[in-house]
Image (cartoon, rainbow, N blue to C red):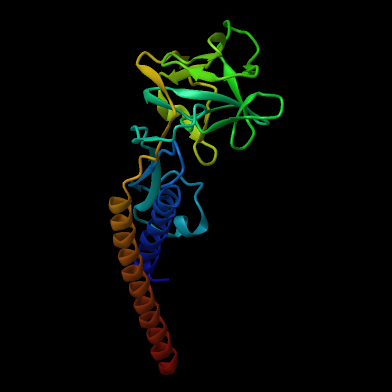
Length: 249
């Protein structure tokens, strides 16, 4: 098989993976607290083995695509809802899911029938507690809710709970698990955020630059189409060569 075809395919595959990352960013432009991903290309020398049959067939560098999360802050949007909370500075809210604790910047919260503070998906928001204490949900009595900049929650002027806010020494050890939720790896070290305030009545918007992302998608699509045409042309040339050689037999 023509070696050039394999190289063109490797480029085509990497562009397809990058397109998937960028289109997911665009799809979440209106997701509160969403953090975009940045695709980047890396050349991998095929010397260690253990790759696919296609990769093993290529005796030259293969292009891989990786993505890293952009944890920069998004703009704040005022909603007037006292249960909509945004974080300024570093940090995450902690929520309890059926899969365990997860971390988010999406502070679009509400009260369930038990008056527990929950996310739109129904995940319970965790209160600050003592070290090694079992995570505890925030349950509020009837009354007017007021959330302070330090995360303390008062109902009719009486302190009821405090939001648990955390960050990590190394944010690259957080794995996206859907939407604006992140899971911490076993190696991640949780620390209290040094510079973080809660803004009640606001939501943090996604940090996606729509124009920039759409421009990059268009560029990737053009590259994808160019490589597709190149593969088609190379394949036709190989087929024609086979036909000519068989005809001489």
